[in-house]
Amino acid sequence: MNAPKSVGRRGLLRTASAALVSTTGLATLQPGPARAENAQFDESVLIKRLIGREVVLSPRVHLDMPALFGNGYSVPMTLGVDSEMTESDHVRIIHVLAPENPIIVVAQFSFTPLCGRAEISTRIRLAKPQNVLAIAEMNDGMLLLARRFVTVKTDGCA
Amino acid sequence: MAAPESALHARVQAPGTVARGEVFQVRTLVTHPMETGLRRDAAGHLIPRDIVKRFTCRYNGVIAFTTDLHEAMAANPYLAFHLRATDSGVLHFLWEADDGTRASLEKPITVEA
Image (cartoon, rainbow over the protein chains, first blue to last red):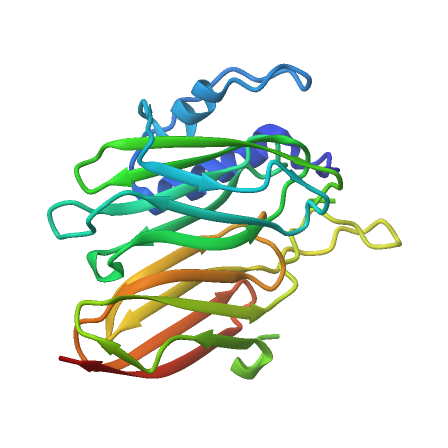
């Protein structure tokens, strides 16, 4: 978690934001207030800033990760959304965010009806214990959120 | 100094024959350090970022599934996802890294009525 001084947290957040927005074309970025280094992370502010709109906590989004994992370098993650995956009703993108990582945006998974099922398994890095967030963007524009608190014992970003 | 395509070693597991309409899992793995650009070497110099930043799966030429990967994806990125069997043909997989390195694989698929 030793982010280089020359880049800094805001720069990284901005980079992350730019990456997210360039992929989705979703949001106009609002320059937010600088966050004190030790302040509690405000999830809704972060989401507003990265995604640009409100999200709804939804039981349709399933974010399966171990509650406790020793190695922050490679934490297993399975992520699914209840969806028929038809032309008229499908998941377009799932964004994964790790708000306490030096670089917050982890990945964007882009689905099509050809997938048949909106489910992905992978392995991610976590710098410290935190709420991992998954935000599913549906084809009608709905944004559905799931979060999962994951404790890691070693810093996977150092 | 762009590395040749063969510098990335990729593997894909997918069934060769599937019933029409069936949803099947595709598992992929590519060998890559996913260097974040945040780490320093023993001399204190930043190790430059080098990650696989994009994965694309095409089904008979049509993009079916893509992933934008960032620094927090684990080394040797593993991605397992699903496809619905529509027609026989080819699954094409492409990994693209920061330094221009690419890996691609093709897998034939037979769809039975």
